[in-house]
Length: 17
Image (cartoon, rainbow, N blue to C red):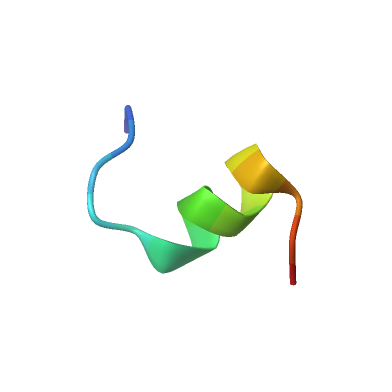
């Protein structure tokens, strides 16, 4: 899972809710 299409993953990478 490397910057796929998971919104939750994006939140974890950015750290924004």
